[in-house]
Length: 331
Figure (spheres, rainbow, N blue to C red):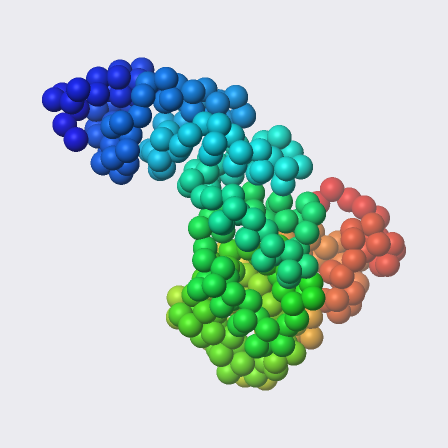
């Protein structure tokens, strides 16, 4: 639409007054033709209502650019009822404004046809109460997923690796909702097949899904294989790698440069230990290098104390000092 030749000058005036330039106005009109027929009063009402629920006015232009359709929604029949429904799911006043800012399209979906069936779907998986609200409001894009073609496919996949629908799958979805956005055949299945190829059992897979579902969402070729190749280059054999991954799956998604390499170098070059000690205690890779590893290693060396990695790291600092009769120092 060419703004300069349009009879809808009220649209031009309204959006320019709200901080849009001509390019931005043309963009939202291109995305949503219905805007051309919306009255200025309706635009003002919707804008003011979105402000009134806690959305900062400076964020509204970005929100409307993402989804100009929200300015065409009927205030009393569509906008207010949806926000009231979302508010019943919230535990904090900022959750609904935050959800709209992340994914403004959430307001365009039907309560009866989309939101209610979605809530029912998650409740059938054992997600309820505050967890249900957290799941939807912290991950509002979920409302755009089809239950039949998207969400049910992910659930069926998790069932096939041995998980149950009586709360177990629900817990996984709450812990890592992003898993629902991934394609089963292109991402989730290749990842699980890769994990099985390393020597993990089906039981191990279930533990990965329950405790570290984010591992199942990573790309095999871009992340998992490079990490595997790095571990092999440092001397870990196939059996040791299976043990490492089975007990601490995130080792396959940690940054080689910023996490794995510095810790292995510290283990071997500073602590003067063999890599097999990390195999015996894979949780070594989850501890902070500066705050825990370097600090405790320094204290132990000052007292000439020898111990296993688990004895050194598997406790809080107070217990660590007590265990080895050390005096707390600023190090």
